[in-house]
Length: 109
Image 1 (spheres, rainbow, N blue to C red):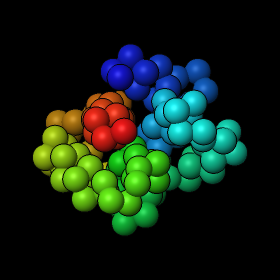
Image 2 (image 1 turned 180 degrees about the horizontal axis):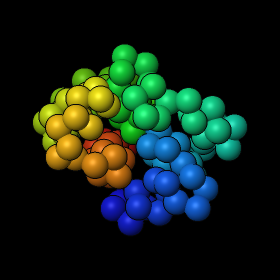
Image 3 (image 1 turned 90 degrees about the vertical axis):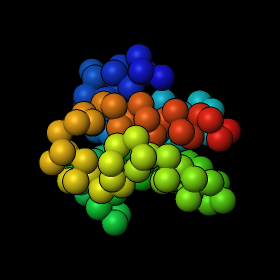
Image 4 (image 1 turned 120 degrees about the vertical axis):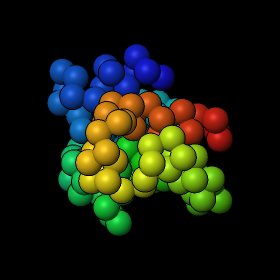
């Protein structure tokens, strides 16, 4: 998952964190290119609730019954669900948030 996160987050296509997650799961979850493009608006702290964009995308892909456990695991590993709080702490880079979010979803599917 680490290699995929590094390939898609700010890779040749210029995907933000939210888009990178969708691209990683594109084939498995039948994500349309149009959806990936729409999620360009959800990176950099602009996801709903101020969530990390990677987390937001994973929640978009996951069954609602998994949301609480994914959020809890993500918060434990990053220190927050909120993008700006994660970035202010400076301990978990965005590419790691992509990896962590994807791994949490991968555990559940």
